[in-house]
Image 1 (cartoon, helix red, strand yellow):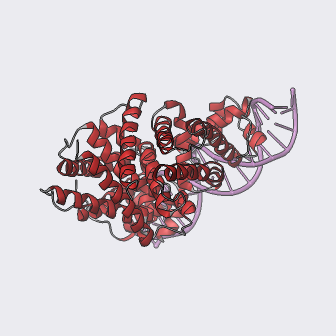
Image 2: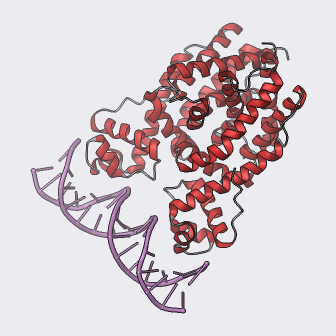
Image 3: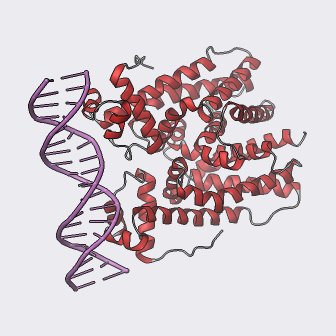
Length: 213
Length: 213
DNA sequence: GTCTATAAACAGATAGAC
DNA sequence: GTCTATCTGTTTATAGAC
């Protein structure tokens, strides 16, 4: 993970505007004029700072990796030794991810941008996969192995970890659907907490069965 | 659910082209000229048949609802009475969804289009939500209630059902990530089957715990 | 570094021939 | 119903003043 320093000044404001507008409307549907206006500058500054619209997109991807890496690093600081510690750390990751990804207006632009990029499968995903997704998934697999005694890199373990993470992410992807069906205005801290309770209970149910085998 | 008859001729080819290109590149990034070329016709025919680009988008949404409704209707034909029948029907739905949504090249354009629309939250989602998503979710909640003795429309039930469905859908949303991490070329029938095995096992684990309470 | 003005390409919609 | 040609507006990128 290369430690890129946070941007400053006009460049930072352009990235913030790009994250917001790319996330809400999509990359192609967002014009450079809108971005410049949102950032309080002019169109030419995008080419000056990032070489063009595509350069700004890549810079937005780097910013996402920077911020998400910080959040997940906080939730799982050190590799645990005991079974119980591993389980507690998985719970903490699920709760942190749910709060960050499903709720929390603050991270909304970030996650919307990243979801679109994940669907696209372009160069931004490539960068984020290598620096963030792959190491995080491996770490979660290691926790699962510590908690269950199963092998960390077996196919079953990797798929189960995806299924656990997938539960969380769906509440972001399908958020317009979830809020409608639940009769919620939004997924705020309270709702995110109740979702996380369900997902943690699911984790324990699945663990209970897997620890037998 | 209004039973719209399948389109024919040029209109059908335009919808197929729209589904494919909107799904792969996004609505805004796809030009009407590309669509016409893919469909083997001219730009003006889009306005003639659907009133414009937006009309074609809505027609694509209706086509998605038609096809997905057929698949899910096959997996859960009649409301079951017994606990075991309800569990078997939930298994069948999970397996059918996994095969259809995560694997199967045939439905690729369909699901890609719908995922983009779900993120957008526009009028296409509104239509599909009312005719398809809401009734299907209620039906799955009823199955859960029959299987566990819990209340079908309680908050916990609705959230658990979302978590079960979310597991499936993540393997589509995050497919570029999953295939990379698993070292797969694609998610074909074999891989989809192994994923479904994990998800059905998860279902049983969660059921085991919920039936106690 | 910031900005205005402009260029060159492309968008969606439509008029009108067939 | 299908197609070509065209209209009108918007796009990104860039040249050049400050």
